[in-house]
Image (cartoon, rainbow over all chains, first blue to last red; front, side, top):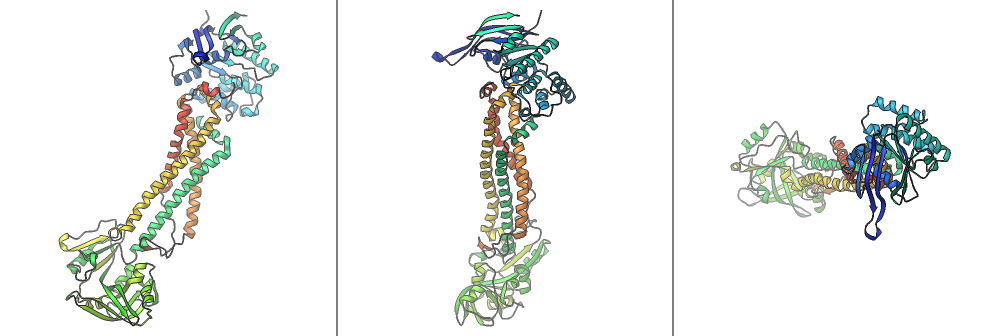
Length: 229
Length: 407
């Protein structure tokens, strides 16, 4: 039986209070298994990004429980959450969000440096993932010198290089043309299959929906369907 | 990596970084330069004051300085002189008879302070011969020659060789005593009091006129090995109260000058604190601007695993890099400024300040410890200025920061 990586129970998230209170998430119960390649889909404002932010501990819940890799995120302090994300969660953002003053190599290395990974191992892992994402030879380029697709590849390498339990990607192809987006998705799908790495996307990109093994549909903050493909 | 990130972040806005660095550097230059000039000025003042009539210390009979009572001569003179001369730190000693007197010429009269000196002995201490602008210095411990300040000469319209009568109360009977002198020289020390009211005559002649015998009123002393504040390194042996004499350091003889030398350090400290506080506010502003501009980016680095403490350290490292840059620039500029003024100096000659007239240009007096103290203070205040931005970064929620730009 596959290991549960993410487990949420009766998640609620609301913003504001009284008459202005908005329920972003309502009674969300979700289990993400190791090796999942899941897309959270739904119209704008359905709560996809909010859910992803909660899953990685960036945002808090109003009520309910959330466990990632067997640990409850609610009981962690800011510092513990940062360390937890560093060790267990890889994040890929829509706008790549690389650190502009660091080179490709340094951007990928950054998290490992925070983890105190020895230099030789860092270099080895960076080399491996740069090859995996097809950016060998571009180690010393700065993000501004790369195309959007290349930057997102660096962001994926940065997310994967510390071997997290799960990669959470918030609309990773939204800023890319469809061809580049498709290439990236194929690459992530390959990692998923070859390395058994778990991916959860928030998206309304049909290409992701097409390639996802599992589709979780959110509407008005509620899961209305959860289907395996 | 955090250091690398901090250093590169600093150069993202080069103009702002250079401006901030320049503000700190200029503050540092100002402090180092003003400090060296102030030390140069007080050293100059001290030298002028102690190289003149005053010396480093003086001995008198108790109470003499209150009213210059001619009867109050130094007690047990021979024994006292012997004691003073035993001190290996003593370099010069000058014995003086002195009294308030009336100086009369054919052109009128003028109250003066007359000093009876041994010209050779006195010249080693106060270098009066260098101040002679007309005529010549005294040449004997006895005789009828007199030198006086140029303002006295001007008031009485005196010319060299003119006969002058000195009238004063003698020490024996309290009767008026007179003696005739011939003007042999006119001096200009630059000090108002001396130039306008002082006459020097041979000591033995004045002693005879005042019926003092061999007695004197004052012994001026100069020592070697002084502290930077101009105080003899080895404490002076004070005479016992019962001896009837007192030995006073220049700090007691000229308390206003001493206060100025003491206030120099205090005023530098006050100025330093004010200047560094202004700089610190500027640095805080620069770092906060950087923080707000890069809020989203800080959100990213916190979201990918940078702990609050690591994020705060990043801000502190940026401040350290800025401080380091400023200190290097500041030290270079300060050394250049000091070198320039060490060559040309500042010309305050002839200007009197707190009873002392500057006789020569003021040059910066360089103290090596200042090259460490002020940069250390610069760095400390820069770091202090970074505490608030670092604190903000520590408590900044990554989710709030990420909302500053659409993901």
